Length: 171
Image (cartoon, rainbow, N blue to C red):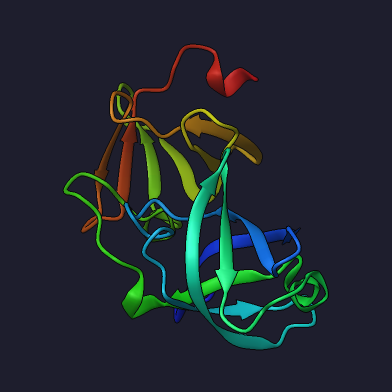
């Protein structure tokens, strides 16, 4: 992800016969999807296409978006696999104590009990539970749960102090 844009959703596929698309949200900003009016679609061929959203509604764990001017399955098909993004300036705001995952990439992670540097946050994984920080520890990837009970973030110092659950780094 480049610093000038923030991906907010991934288009999975066309949905229905009226040109709707099924998307998986990639945002933690409350209300982002249901109030989305404009975004840019980065298509599979790498081109960017501005889109206007006429309507959005939840469909199970995902969202359905009705894009202005997209009226058929055939017109929606080019959006399959696209990323929907907004400019960094439009990424929104979070409540106190919440963080954009993109802001935490590169932060150094330390074991709170030993003070030992574990490594930098290299990315994120999400499987339905808490988000998992990808941290390279002694040359191999560890997935550390990012939950308030375990993690203290200092964005100014770019550090995250973690209570590492017993045995986690041995997996």
